[in-house]
Image (cartoon, rainbow, N blue to C red):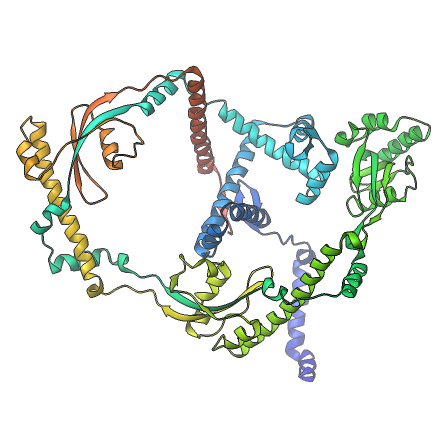
Length: 626
């Protein structure tokens, strides 16, 4: 085969193709191949791009937040590709809104100074210990979040400008005292009413449903009779705990494990240092000269802390005399770290050091030497780790064998169960949106409802439900999604139509009673014929839970003395009459102030949405990819 490939590469057609490739380089230029950014664009907003990287980062951040907040509920939704597409689209809409607000802020000339950014960072509780800004914590959190101090300042600048614009919108909306008081009085208002409820069951014998009506209802509402696809699963589930109980370790193994992993019980050397930073991303002779002159002052006996306050570009550490706190290896910029760990004793000062942030003068202020925890102090921890390690090795081996037999013998879980030493369990039939908890993992559902398992009737691959938690499933039974035939649902439709007809008959009857009541006629005979009585309710609130919701809503729409007919969710019908409107008590000054803030906030939210909508209407927006 290799010989044929070599012969083909020497042929006339191979040479022709090679010639075309060379020509493409000649005409297009090599630069067009190697200089392509490779950065996809999700949307273009008035000439400014929102990249796919930005969209993906925002999408992943929001998804992580939703998963943390809603757990398995969101995971179930996320298993639906359509839902995820809509979710992703909403993230892009938000990014477009933010881009429009950024452009509006730039057009308005909104700016944030370096001093404002510094003040905001210092007051952020995330960077404080005991209520005070801590530079070490600040740098550690930034590293964990993937920020450098300069990039974080840029992020803060954008965020604070956006908030400036938001605050300007907040300042334009307000609520007057009488608005808040009026809203409070309306909310506190209660009503006296009476109602009589007529059961639709009293008219069931007076109505009938024809076959034609049943057929017409079926055709008009045919989607109501679609069944959801269902599966029942056989499954074998295994966790690390199933293996752990059989694991034993000897004293010799424990001692050897401790020695082999001694670094786990070693606290590496840490150093505390102060620095004076002369910020410069590139080599700069003038900045270097300034750094050298300050170093001369330090070496001449100048106060390092005072010189840091005067010269350092790192304003946060400068306020503490340049102190950076404690740090270990692998934390700081490599060049900075190498120089800091090269200093031999407390009080030593480095030469000028160049890092990606600029030029540094480093002073070593303290050292925590390396420490190793004795074996006797961590024996239990070592035992747990070694047992877990051996169990994981055993678990992985079993998992590999399970994967093999699940694939090689796809028509049964018997061999899988034998390898796992676990029983084969079976679920009841379920739909994709209502699975039993044991198989509710998105990857299990995706596999369970796949064509491979349903059509081909094979075992799934090994499905990972979490760390050291696996499952293999197969479809035990399958019910296709379908539309039920008319004869299957005929009785169901008949019951629906009878209920509707009975309620309509009750509604017609009680409407006649309402007409007499409005005209001032005596309705006692009608009430007696249906065994109806008025139910009196006093001081009913808008959120009263002792009366039907529909009755309460009707009562708060009526004027005093007026009557209305309402349908209840039970299928019955009520006659509702408003007797009296009771005014609420006026709010005190504190409550009025709180209500003013709430009303102003609501108005601001509506205004903000309107501004975004207005900006979108006037903007040139191209959505390229989602």
